[in-house]
Image (tube, rainbow, N blue to C red; front, side, top):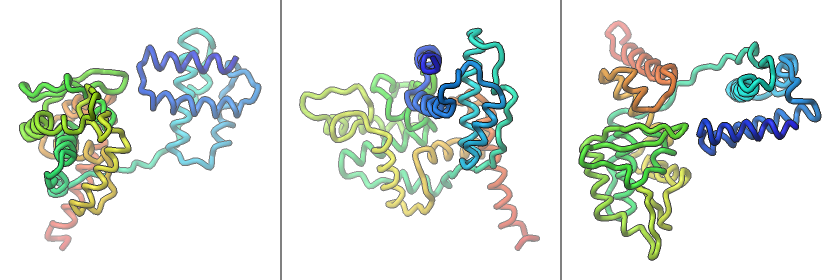
Length: 292
């Protein structure tokens, strides 16, 4: 019966919560590991002691991974509690391990300008330029970027319609540079990437005429980082961090940044406040005359 309750919960995440396939796969993987640990024990009769034993069983893993295990189990048992399948959530009293905060990598304004200064020769260059400009102009997630459709673009009003986590829709403004780069790609180069007899609604497509993949874009950004002589180990999420950091540095309200990024919790956005504080501290230590 354990599989029944797990599958019922996963269906809830998929159809009611509208979680992404990637998130559902992650939850399924964690719950399967827990079920394997239980062996034939009834998943509905699990106690806090069982959860603690399971955590100790995985004590060789890093704190972030263990915290994710606890989050998944808590969500699962909360679902069972809400549906009156169980009377007590055994995870409710379990404490998350303390996780050391690692500040995300971001680019300086000079570095982001170098990254965006692509030598435009081929249709792929114009596509890559448009993708990076949109990413920096909006701070959207890579999953949101590669799933953009042509109909999601409103160049007349300098805006994009984005579907984030849980299929939540948000409208994000874009600057004139990103808009012009996007229009140039759409009007003059996108059709060159389409294969014969292939139609696609996706905005950014690969050499097969299909929407570009996460791995495909990851390779693009790595290639452009080398070209721009950027030494930092960057990813698509680095551009998102850079977008938020520059906005905050220039005085944007944290709540506005939260809305633009599509964060459900302001605590997630507050990481950028720590980034700014760290940056100010470094500049103080480097520039204050008493430290020279």
